[in-house]
Length: 350
Image (tube, rainbow, N blue to C red; front, side, top):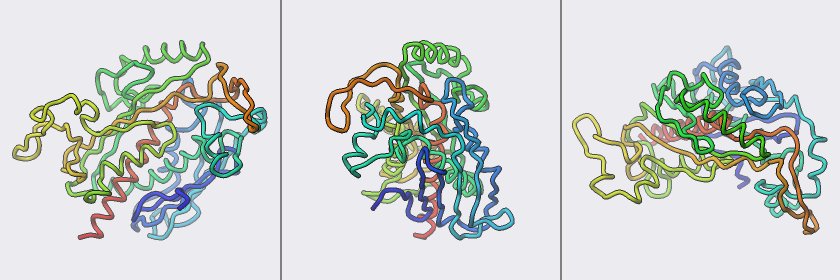
């Protein structure tokens, strides 16, 4: 399998490269009669669009979506939905110096090892540009989840060691880092400016929450809901770790501390993160993703060229200082796609 398709019932195939004519997605298995128009999709795309957020890449993409099939008079028809986002602002010449060398931290070396060639222009298929297609597909999943009163949100929990201490969800999208703690934003800005001045980059943590998810989603043993969510979020290039509920803190807890007591109407705590034995328990699903620093940095690094000769490299061009905040809507999309797929799978089993 080529690894470009996600899901079993609600299936998404993405295509395209960073410096090709465009990127897009085909969504198959979407139920009919869901409202869907370009404005609904573009509202989601606007949150990951380059050239908008502070300290982000100055690449200017309109991210207008064209719905080529699967929608009639504003409603999904139940047939495959084809979504196209054209690339408008490509500067491939900026990458010519990278044709013969591998960038540390990127997929250059591994793509060359797998395929025997690679698209050096911005990383080709491995570039973050591919995630625009995921966000577009996630907007379709959102329409399904909205009808079921299932809400998914995501936000920056930590950036460069600066962590949110409060959570005001009403203000998530009102600051340049999509952080729920307005008081942490000035420190995040200072941290980004400090690291940018050194020619370096930052990582962080993104938290996602699912509310209204019914109990019973997930399959036993090899297709658990938490495993599927982890795989979905880990499929995003910059994500290097995922934890559910208490996550790695569970390793330092006693059983009496970690267990969530059952009480009439639910659970007294949520260390399980809304999933038990791989199946949703009806509680809020809580997931955190560790996002690595952007590998394209202006500081000199050691590398090799295609012939294996040692080289030094300082990556120039239009790059983010951190995948945060633009990765937040991508994680949001992958969680939505996972829940939508498992929701339809559960219906098929009933």
